[in-house]
Amino acid sequence: MKIAAVNTHVVTEKLTTTFGMSQWQWQARSSCLVEIVTDEGLVGWGECFGPAEGSAALIETVYAPLLAGADPFEHAALWETLYNRGREWGRAGVPIAAISGVEIALWDVVGKALGQPVHRLLGGRAPEAFHAYASAFYYGGQWRGDIEAEARHLLQEGYRHVKMKVGADLRSDVERVHRVRAALGPDVLLAADANRGYTTAEALVFARETEAAALWFFEEPVIPEDLAGYRELRARVNVPIAGGESMFTRWGFAEMIESRAVDLLQPDATACGGIRETLLVAGMASVHGISTLPHVWGSAITVAAGLHLATALPVVTPSLGRAAPVIELDQAPNSFRHTLSDLAIGPVMPVPTGPGLGVEIDRSVIEAYRA
Ligand SMILES: [Mg+2]
Image (cartoon, rainbow, N blue to C red; front, side):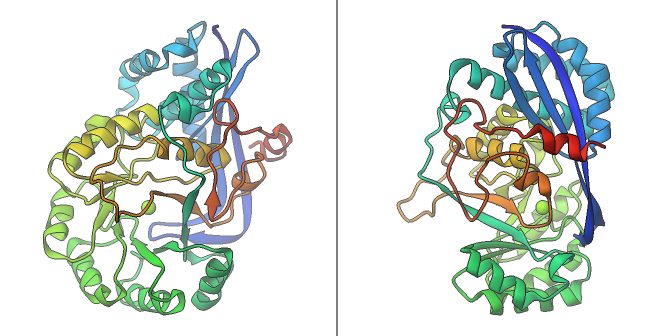
């Protein structure tokens, strides 16, 4: 079996209501989908995190020629080729996100060729279903700051793990955390994500002034370049520190892991190098006592990849009392999460059982949103 074509599809959905995190407001949802076609007519799908046009351009001009005629079963070796030949384009950011989308599509192809779901190829054990943690409480968005209404909606949907956005304004963020905690009640696990919006000093104040809210974790408190800031926070506050969605490849993660800058690691399979690279990173982290809770933020393809991946993550600290792993599920508007495939999206998600990623892609959605 040989790779006959590597196609990219940039899709964009203009939003009627913008929503934001600490860095910017989203006016649109955009994604680079990767389609790999074999000479036997099999089709595999992947997705790249981040600027879609950049990933598509790199795949078309740099990576697709390297993949032409290659055997998809050699996906790990192909990864090394793409990474080494693409080095000049950068060892972080868009070039690695582009490789990630290709790698996920290769897993989909191999699974379809073998008639096995990706989690079986990874040697994972699929639970009956994963519980999702809701990434919610954005700035603005469809709830327009009505914290109580959004909390009621999430509880009615059945979410028992929730993450909220902070990092744009320290004083109002602290107040919002306490309002969200009061609205959700004490039994819901509640995390806060600053998307690297605070200084270390501000993050210290935030962590101390939200102690009564008993946060599950505090994500990306400071910029990812400031690992000393991460370490200082870890040493001085009583909330677990999380991060990693802005890191790429095992080399990019090395210092964050080896210096124990986080309690919880959040690599993104569509950004950091793919499914295998995420497992390599998670393996490194496990040696240092750090659990991995992958970042998942994209279309149904990304969610499906996240479900398969979650079955095979290393167990770092076994204990009968430890809760089952959960998977991130974004709550902001994104038609590609709900309409691109038949994947069941919601607070409880079974791992797809069909071959490959186990998602059927609706090409009419791609055509309707083609940029
Ligand atoms: Mg985040």
